[in-house]
Length: 306
Ligand SMILES: [Zn+2]
Image 1 (cartoon, rainbow, N blue to C red):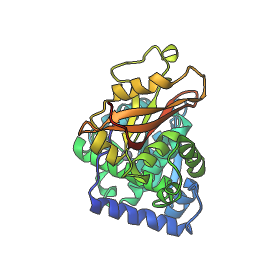
Image 2: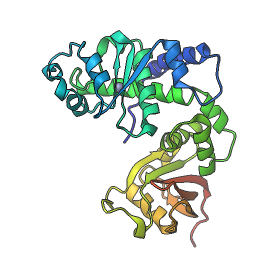
Image 3: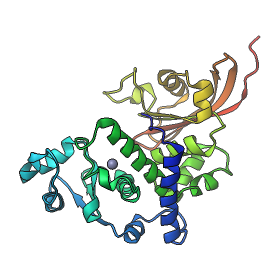
Image 4: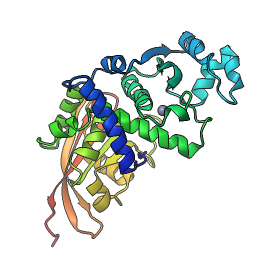
């Protein structure tokens, strides 16, 4: 899973919208309070769920969504919305965000920030009614989604603030976990952002997986696709990007214990770069009782083998 890269001009436009929000809130301390963001932007928020799709009916029945006759049959509304793989909707004409309450609460914050992103990106309003893949060509939709995700990241990590605060400390999982608490976002999104943005020149790789120990793997574990996410810093991709996720997972499994939670292990690992030069990395893995997080950080060139 990789993000679409935005053009510098597009990113700069979104950055200036996010900067406006942060200024409007008086440059607050992290974590950013999305309730205040909504107040500032005069956005309304409501939830829908399988048990209660009232908000959805009330709002969407007012919509004229091209080609979506099914919306005229309220009983199918929730199914229709979910079949379009919507996790949330933004209704520009009503300045309203609708969130799927049945998703894990941890995801609500990201989804809400994503919908705020659609609101603040000036060219989105005209292009969308709701967040539907059927309205737009798939590539155009994917582009808008990437832009809204970029905006969500900028909002939740408060533009330059995250990099500024994270940059001064040694790269460890302990730091990533502290930043998770400080900015109030998920550990996965925090790890992702840390690796991609804080030290782009330092080769770093992060994995989000199930428990790596053979005795604790889930029934559905797929050895040919062992990682939920594999995120690499730009310089890791450049020099070590040929290392496969399967190899990385095998490496992690080699030093991890079978503990139920907490630190699973750490090790010095040798990876070869594109020129076949060997380098030492420090790898560490932590299990938070449902997913294992690994951070691998470049240390130095390894001594030649004699
Ligand atoms: Zn979207």
